[in-house]
Length: 208
Image (cartoon, rainbow, N blue to C red; front, side):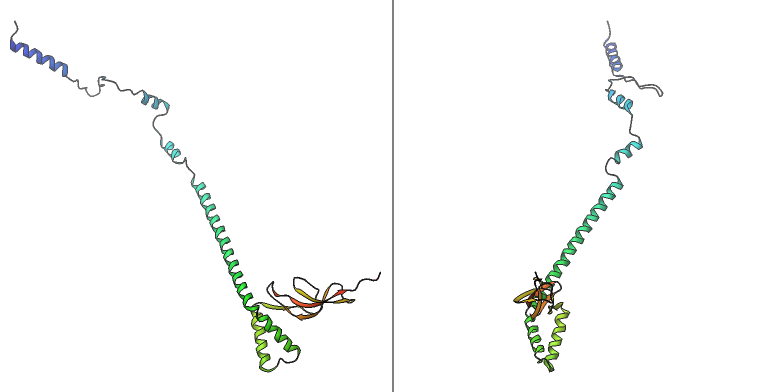
């Protein structure tokens, strides 16, 4: 018959044996426990292993290169410069047009004053202080770009002349010609302020 003390000792020994964990000795392999599935790791190692430094560089350079980015930014800058130059040209052109319109509006009524000066000059009435004022006015309007045109003998141009009357034919002319200038024409640069008012003659018809 086994004593109580002996039975307790045997049971404790069995429990100790069941829970005992083997500690591997240095230099030996640990006992295999429940194995994790590392087949994926094996496959990864077999297919190429960890990334090498050159592989990392290749991944970083997958986007546009520095040269490509430089070309793109240069094209953007050139496009912006072209747009700015076009805008500046439009602004300058609009500014000139506004100035021309303002000058045209101011000088148009003065043309009638210049007509009066012309008639006074033709009749010998342009003298003294009136002459000085008239000459000063003519210099001022000329400085603003107002020029006079229309002289007897000019070939008739419907864009520059207004024919008031037809005086028949003249054997001395070869084309329709302004024979008499009733009122001179005026223009600012290439813009006609008033057409010259003229009397015209036709060339004589050739003998049959």
